[in-house]
Amino acid sequence: MVFVARDIARPGWWVAGAVLAFAGWWGQPLIAPEHFERAFFGLFWYSMLALAVGFWALPSERRFTGSEFVRRTMLLGVLPVYTRRQPVSAFRQIVLETDPNLAGPDTLWVLIEGDGDQRFAFAHRRATRAGRVRQLALARALSEASGLPFAGEVLDAG
Image (cartoon, rainbow, N blue to C red; front, side):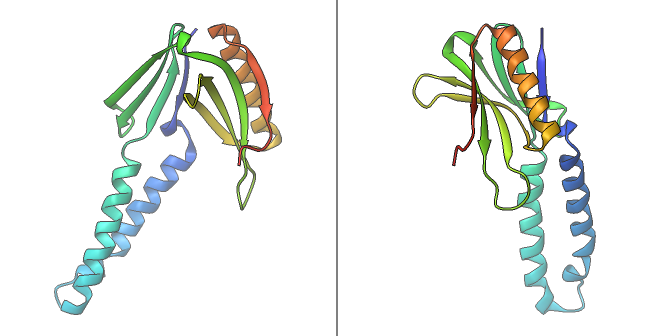
């Protein structure tokens, strides 16, 4: 059984793209040729937008193929740019970890842990009631499919 978690499948990725497009449109007066003093602010504005678009344009995809865990960095979610494969034997357990947030619900991570500091973050979701149910189901299904034990939930990782 193949499990896939894609960042482009999350609404936040699409909303962030729309916000970046709006910010690009909004900054057009900063590069207007009439006022040279605005050009510095326009250069700063668009260089920060270019950096943000660079991060936004490279979402990741995590998958479990039955024998290995794969993380792929994709250009706009379509073209693989970088792929990293790790065999199931490199890991020892699956954990559901809660990461505290300052505002809003905490974040739940499905982590596959190996020896030492080796970890594979498979999926994350907001720690709402529905999010917790979905993450628990995913962790248990991954545990069953991979043969790794589900070690339970770590309530506070911070």
